[in-house]
Image 1 (cartoon, one colour):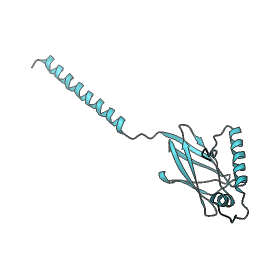
Image 2 (spheres, helix red, strand yellow):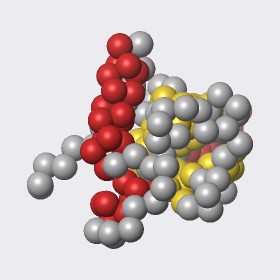
Image 3 (cartoon, one colour):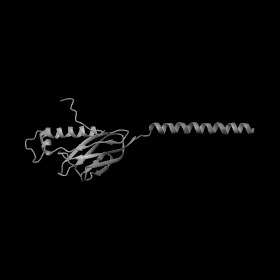
Length: 165
């Protein structure tokens, strides 16, 4: 076999290998699960009257992540995938409160206002209000005030919006 034919044969074989590698790489890129990491989620946990709620455990159970609120109520989760996450807050009184947060492409900030037991009782239709609690309307008014304050500082806020009454 002439030398030029051997070279053409090696080039053809090399091009075939390159084509196969390109096809495999494209197939892997298309079928591999992709998690877009959005970064951090942070905010403050606040008691029903607006004071900081420090020392509370917060978790994103689906991801196996847990953190604790600092004395000033601040909390943070780092390296979260983009999308919806359910945060569980373990209250000092033994109760549990949940919040759904959508983490976008940038750092996300969400404050969590804990509901008083009186507000929970009112929402659940219970007649026995807890002592030292805020009424449901007072808790919602406080939430609106905190959301307004956060928006004034340029922070993202979460508001309840019941479009179905």
